[in-house]
Length: 418
Ligand SMILES: Nc1ncnc2c1ncn2[C@@H]1O[C@H](COP(=O)(O)OP(=O)(O)O)[C@@H](O)[C@H]1O
Ligand SMILES: [Mg+2]
Image (tube, rainbow, N blue to C red):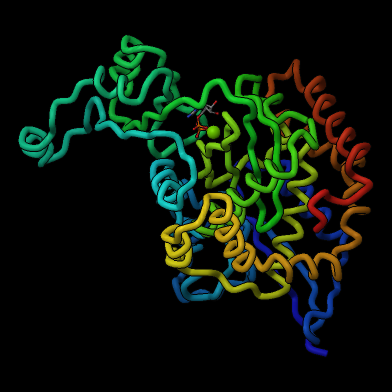
């Protein structure tokens, strides 16, 4: 029998907890698989940052990347590795510009998703550059905040068009607030977006390949409480709309790992924030949902490495546009987009793969998430974020939430059946 070692690289930044869990469980799985007659084993390694020749071979089959969105050397190494060395990486680095909120809004509006009314404003001030003066003098039109505010209607949200971790987001209730926020926005280019307020639900749907988790989300809670711990809070119809929406977005942009925030008002789910280049993966925010993330990440990366999943090097949007232009209702259209997503994510093949090769993951994960090693991983993450006098208290809090997951879900396998 042919033999092969499939290599998974972790391209990491400040991540502490999830790589520890990922590495430990990958080792404990002791995978030794027959993949189409090739005996396949797995190794995983943290990728270091160093000079490289463009001709230097790449030893990884799959890279789980957390740096592309902000660290250029790693992004360029990854792009060259895709182009020259057939690397598979999540997420597609050429989608980086689509990680700008405004681009993702535009694309999903074109596909007919109910993105709230959204505007863009030229910035309040500019960095100096050679042609700036001449350009603005000739072409920049005066505008009235009052008119724009009235057209969108209050309240609305002002937020940087490229997005990013809640920075610079303001709820605008009236003209005076609009004026103040705009005056304070400096060189930042802002989107204005109709507020979906009040809403019945705020859900963050996290997608990892075709695996989806719908989390009840409370943006007004402190960071460690935003991901709520209720499960089964949505009916099947709501769940399937959110899944299909997230599948559509993620497959459209080539994102293996992304989360989609949607608000439900008057029976309609409005997506408002769904371009997350580096989705939250920390136990300190995911806590109860953290084991799902680790298991899903293992399943998807192992599948990609084992099956030599080819990287889709370009976005290939035409099939989505074809569906968008057909005369069908919104739910049916969304289903058709999701069908493309399932094809691109190879959902059925993935499901079979998990069934044939990863059946023992549930049991191993159940044990690991109750182990001293897990507690230590939580401690290390907490110690990096919290003040000294809160470390024990928060370690305990997150540990208890992971134990709650074990008690409620851990023994049964994941609800979406992978
Ligand atoms: N259109 C909207 N309707 C209601 N709330 C919104 C809207 N846009 C933003 N928000 C609120 O502002 C928060 C931050 O905005 P978001 O678009 O998620 O940007 P970020 O990339 O910073 O997370 C959201 O979690 C939500 O609470
Ligand atoms: Mg957000």
